[in-house]
Length: 429
Image 1: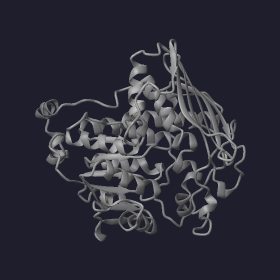
Image 2: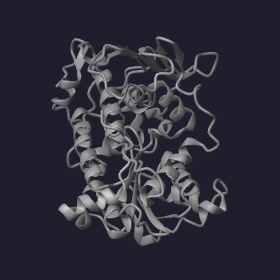
Image 3: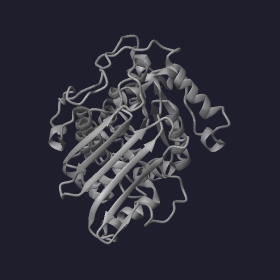
Image 4: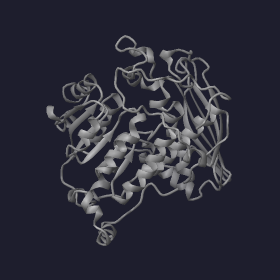
């Protein structure tokens, strides 16, 4: 796997550009590493709860960035986010003073992302539900923007394939790309992973990844506001539908899978999985996702990753919460945090500080698109193995034609929701 943090000096960049000036035709001069403006502008696509908090985290970690544009499918969501940022007591004055979104820079609808990306902002934050991530990521890369994108980077094989191609293009353009896999910016993890890779616990013989927690969003929460079955309802209740959330193993458990891929500096080559719905009823309101997965991934060198995730409703009421990773070596073991020193800054803030240092050239160049795209595809592999009952290989997903995204969508139309996958009946494409 290619390194996710590649140190590219300004001299090397200028030397490469002398042979071909395409980079200067694509990237504005002030966005070349080391030539950054004192103040940069950002726009966000997707103004939900995570996006709103993400803006505050960005400004906290990079106070020289101003939010000047917002885009969302829903006007009520955009305006609620703006009020929280600008008028509420939830965020401090240091955040509020950098919220400068004029009315003409509030974009709505399915093409809002294009309008925002082409509005002149320097940095684009992609915070919509992940089913739309490949489409929005493609537009931002083509426009030569620095990008912060929430994980995962896709929900289907075709989308992940696209992001992998775009990841290479974004590196060629010297774009900084930070992905919301924040453990990669957390000091305990950064130091521990390096020491593991340097051989401190010996040769790696086994790995484990767990996200055992509670449900996230239920479709019933939006039943009174919208018509169940419509695309509007599916997108407001996005966590209950595979096409837009990817299921728990992709949307949430990716965090832990990504840590193990990071440690291994590789992606698995095959996986066998089990999964299903132990408590989630079969109903339109509950969508078509599973509530548990258990996967056995195999890396090219024969090391395995045991992956377990579940979302049970009683987990916080005498149940189990377990969100962790474990790497077993021939000389010891590590939870991927215990070999490092405790972070003084929250990782959700630190990743924006690191991103800004990359953009301005005051720190290492960062482009995590390929690394987290490979982890996204790894999680999709695990899901598809559970759905189908087959052993799924990396080559299979890289050649798959699976494309779940609606074409020419409208909010009022009904979008067919497949029944919850049944192994033996479900067909991997």
